[in-house]
Length: 428
Image 1 (tube, one colour):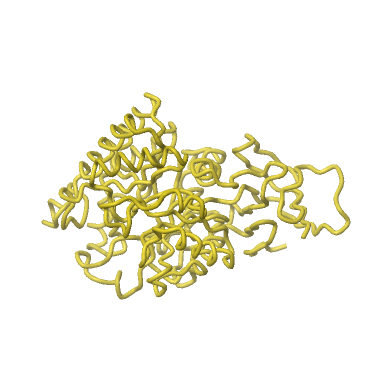
Image 2: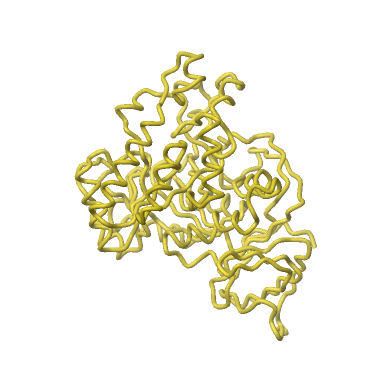
């Protein structure tokens, strides 16, 4: 198909572009911006008063397939993704069984070939996610793994982590780490702070995260490789990462919309509603503010959802026995645009960079650009569309969002993947 997206505001961080222009798509590729001629068979789509951006990239998604398809599948995750403007999702390895062999990487690609979005698998760092023996990195890279991670579990053995970084360095593939000292976090339910003191509930100190980050930054110095720190939640973590970057270490990190927008007090105000239970937990306001500052000054490289679907019977329980985790594919971009771009905390270019161009660069994916010859992964948003978050209308199988009832002022109205319109709510 040939499409001309006409009259939209094109924002592309990869080219530093923010201007009104037409965008021509021919088959699977971006042909040109402001084309000199328009093919006769082009379908002209009026996107005036809309914003056209590179397709969003979520580098942290739990699809739950294989093994827990009742929570989510790659098919339903991809439907949720394109409804939220994500043309690419990167799936974690902590499935049942885990994605720790080349055959299982191939299996994810097979499922992804029938999905609406692009799907890229992450391979496990350790066999069976057991933290005792490295998985076969080279075989998984040959099969198409874009990174390695035991996310959901930390890599507690320091020697194993050092070897993982060194091995991955030879393959030029990053290690994505869930930083948690489980001896410090054991049986913890919420952040160790004001709310844990009031409630008497066992808290998780920020040091459970920061001590592991400090360790891995130290290992990175001697092993080489690329380290990416997932779902950063604490102010001290941001300080450590910022200092490491200043000293030239190849480290990147991500934050989630829920850690950027919520703090531990919402748990108290909600009378400990389980929709606010997550790992790492919501922390203090000073931590939340530090994450936002990291977006602004560059200490934070990407925003990722950590989309973690759970069934109602697993989530709708008393706080202490509910499973941790929230979903985010269908709300993430609208939240960031409404709460950070409209409030002029982030520029449009920076917000889109954090959710498209930067994660694509971290994982070396063919995404995040509207340049000529790029794959035609495109998202169109209406920046003035008011809507209310209603999880009953989600494409995801799960409903565990902490943002139910929030009014947002930005809506994805069209998503194009490899030149094909896969989501369309554009009113002509």
